[in-house]
Image (cartoon, rainbow, N blue to C red; front, side):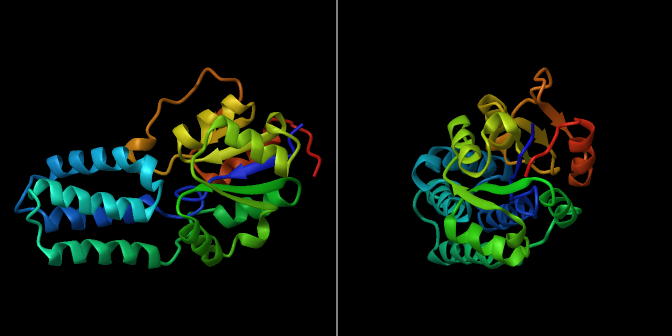
Length: 235
């Protein structure tokens, strides 16, 4: 019996990675005299990976990783004006208006009629709260969880708190690594809705042999998928 559906936020309900890519292009342009684009991308990814445990996910950690990389590739000679530009770029990301993805509102609205719907997102608390408030979707959710990371234990805890356990829950998101694989490990259904852009640190192989794994081309197909599974609902 399915009672609860969890939704990821960034790149599932609204645009996110697009803005990171645009800012990284700006970063590459600022440091073009010091390193090639591919080399900069490798160094920035290494810094982000190294700093996840310290800064967590989100714009602030990304901005600090850009600054750290700029200092490294210039041997500590990066101009203060470039540091200022990177800080400004991070601030602009934190102030960028929300852009809902196609069918996000309609899908959540339709499923909220019969199921408990929970927003489960990771990242900076203030930024995620801002985006949710601007999205206009907040009133549709029975619960909102902003977490530091997504693990099987995270999903078991959340689906026990807001639903009837992970075995009667479904998690929907664009990241196989964060939204689908750990949810499946917790005992839930996992539905992958690819965004088209994926952060390198979120890349993973689809668990196609798992009985509870499903993939959709777009979020609008989710109500039909739930119906096709013939899972009784009990809000």
